[in-house]
Picture (cartoon, rainbow, N blue to C red):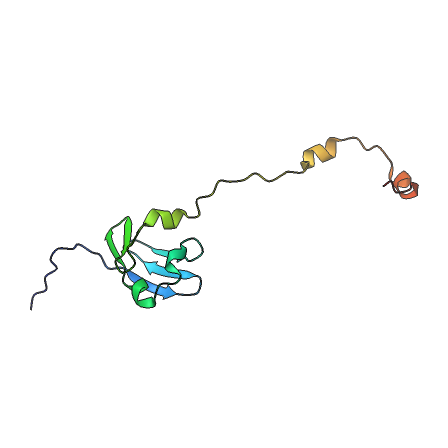
Length: 114
């Protein structure tokens, strides 16, 4: 008996798990997680539609029933956010080199200023 695959060159991709948080997939090369938070159009899809996924090329996932094409790289790199700088406090080096203006005994006896 001989099997023939005509037309499509679709590699095996497997849905490993579907949870309330997202979908785990085993692609040609790796396992990836697609978060419903970052990719909300998958959240309300039926299990049957989520399970029907193809990987036509190493870089593209396709859900024919949902009309969704998704680049593997976009899932791996998501979320694409810029790094925000956080306000910094004095470094330990600055704290050690600043002069002390009051002695400990004066701090205890002086009233609090508001």
